[in-house]
Length: 170
Image (cartoon, rainbow, N blue to C red; front, side, top):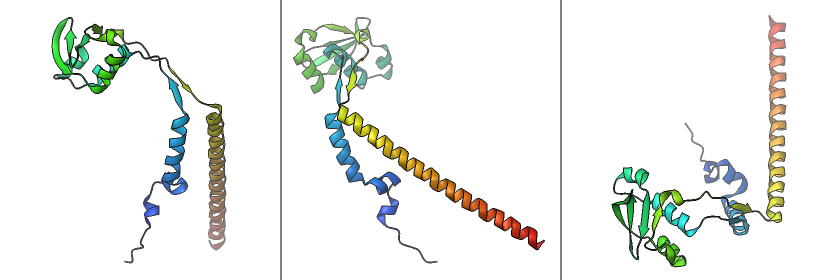
């Protein structure tokens, strides 16, 4: 049996073959630079979220902790005012505490986290780009559907022709 060598390009996912991964990455970098988001998170909320993301000594502590307190280098996690775990403060937490020193040595409740209500600020030029890309995608989809319909019609015609030949021969 003869094996036909396939090119590397054929092994790539369809979107990479059609658009090229490099072009997509370039577009994504330009898009992300222009995309901005306003956040309603405070330093306190970010500290609480950082604790939620950390690894606990016992998994059950992750669900049960009620308060946290941050010192200079270490912090403590509490369950109803009883210390259940000590932790080393991360660089991110240090930055947050530096920007709001009032949060140091303060007992912060797990329930003090507030819902994020930020919004994406999409510049008009990106909105227009997005609309144009949707139009292009819809046009490609329409062309694909037309091609599929033509193929289906052609197959149907062939089937009808074959059944006519079979009826004539019988």
